[in-house]
Image 1: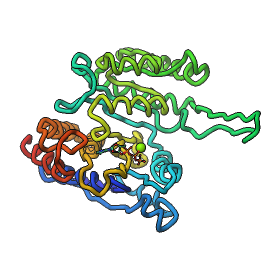
Image 2: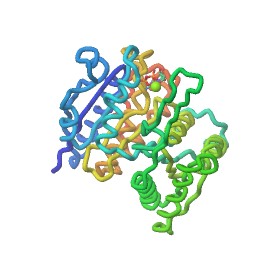
Image 3: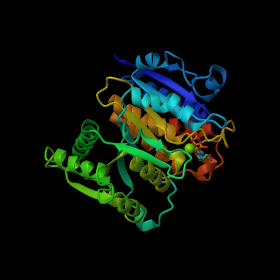
Image 4: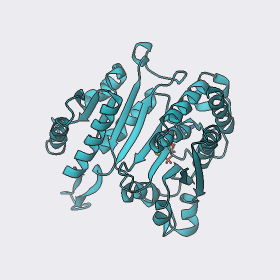
Length: 356
Ligand code: ATP
Ligand code: MG
């Protein structure tokens, strides 16, 4: 039987606190399901490591990670270490070098999770965001001309390659087809007259290969409005790097907040490991107090199980989270409760055990 090798990077701040709860749940799944086994290797990288060694990870870090089936990441970043160092030295480096070009963010309002929308709108919040994760507006291309002079001009270029655009859109069509759901593309062709016109064109071209998939296109401004007013309009959504970044934070806000928002960075070709993480940061304001919400980190474990090919167990973990959410007493303070991080993890394990 295959034993899955998981590289664990607990990282900074609340990262280690929430990751240990995720591993706890993974451990429970392996005990309940004899067909699932895993090994963990821990890598102490992040800002503390940077303070000691002047770098975010070991020089041979990428080679070490490469030997694993998946990476489970807590959070990186801490006050005193500039964002561009913590991000580019680890998180973005991994995403880029392992060609994790798909960023999956489920925006699903589980029953019991808080939602700021009025009742009519929150009936059916269940979207799967597929965000382009390798180029676009975050390609780092641009120029800074005449710095400090009156004629100063700054350019930030969005890079949309044929290969990069086609592969994310094709991945989205495949996903929508397999789930039998509506596929919505979010772009901005009326104002971004090169990149988004191209995006819309590729969306239409690739769509010819998927005549069975129903599609819709929104401008990003309209999409932001409808995500609040009528979120049930969205099922599978594909969008560019920048728009995906912004819309999924909006999505997190309407589906329980940062403490519940999970993300997967996938290399669908499986040539390199994929990476699973809660989308929140290291939250230095609450770090070390044992009150961080571990549910986002646990949800990303569910995504990992799905990617490994255990969809029933992925769903069971979500059901367990949902059960815990309905009990106010065992929630962390961000969700209005008084429970500690580890208690929430224990409750998820208990719920999971009761479910199977
Ligand atoms: P970073 O610089 O690493 O992104 P940050 O200070 O921006 O860290 P975030 O994690 O992005 O912090 O979240 C912002 C705030 O939301 C935190 O300061 C914290 O109060 C709250 N928060 C985020 N994640 C959680 C969580 N898992 N549980 C409870 N509160 C959280
Ligand atoms: Mg942040």
